[in-house]
Amino acid sequence: MMSVSGIEAMGFTPYVAPQVPSTPAGSGGVGGAGSAAGVQGASFGDLVLDGLDRLEGVQDRSDQLAVKAATGDLQNLHDYTIAATEATVTTQMTVAVRNKAVEAFTEIMRMQV
Image (cartoon, rainbow, N blue to C red; front, side, top):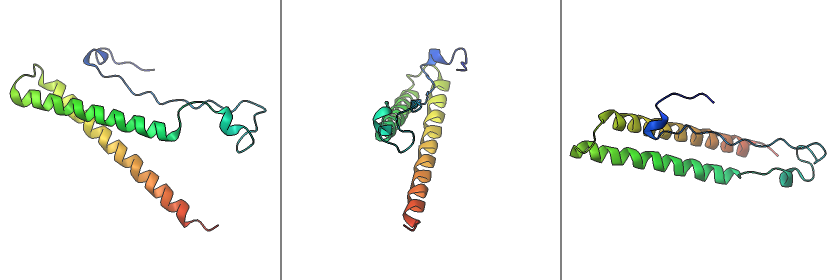
């Protein structure tokens, strides 16, 4: 993993996407018997909830720093600028993922059976 020195000191930890383990040989393969039971890890719903919790945390931190900046309690204004930019980018990415999921669902519903 690439690291930028100094950025960890500000409390920023990069998001590491969870890895889905490959299906072991002899467990049925894709769509075979045991393929769902053989895969361990977080479900899709858990990953979505985790992402939304992270988004909420980033936005809360940005809001807290905005209040501190407005009241003059913030020592370094760049901390707020970084947090606000991070919140904006995170929100934009979340909306883009949601839009792609809606597009995929719509396309699936248009399929003829």
